[in-house]
Length: 221
Length: 108
Image (tube, rainbow over all chains, first blue to last red; front, side, top):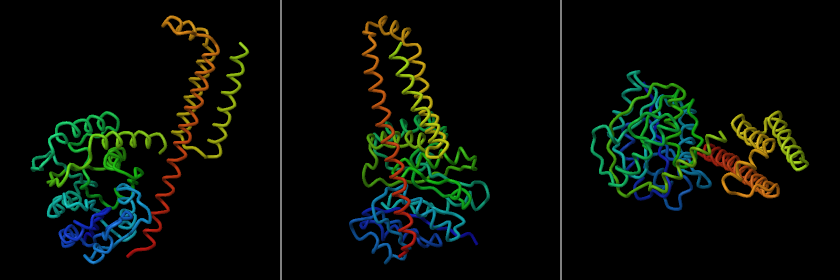
């Protein structure tokens, strides 16, 4: 039987964490919440909802939390690791579609995409300004040829998670994982997913920071 | 000429340090390549200072030697700031690893 562990990085997500864990838990073998030094009750609520909780003693960012989750999942025998956001933007039901290419032996890593048919309620500027710019940047500088350059919903086989170590501790991890998947010649698949935006999310300034972080990590890796 | 020799001695000192750091594995290949390129460009600039003088004159800037030393000083500061930045990035990475190990060892 395939063991699936879902890694959910969370920072001050008391408002959503219980619902998110409740949605995800029936679809996977274990839910691991990485509480990134939240100031609210995220950790206690996650524990009460039945998740395994790992707490960073200081805030380290989403990329760092995902790597902590990967380390835990690999150590505990996960065959497939799901990365899922804590802000209730993703649909847990789509986990089945995300893991299918790995279970069927067609892919080592699966990226969710907001641009392959399913409807997401995109903010206008995000859809027509930030995402096209991000796509050009990641294609030119990192050689990523995917439809969605900044998506947090992904599934990794044990082998892929072991080989791809996330160095960018903040938001640049999404492009970093994609770039490393291409560099290491993993079989990559994209699956259409739905994102429900409750707020704007990462702004253009955040996009510039991601670009800067990616370039710095290229130098010091 | 004397200024050029002094500048080259300084640059060779830094290249020597760089090679030493690489030998002791204190810096990785990417970092080593970046700084080696930086110092080699500086060496070429010093050796061809007269041609550079002519070039900057052509573009309407003063090409006096003292100005060039100031440019070198700015480059040295640039180097130090970048080096500081790289050290901070490494410390940050280590800090993340410590936080990670604490989290993994204290599963709830």
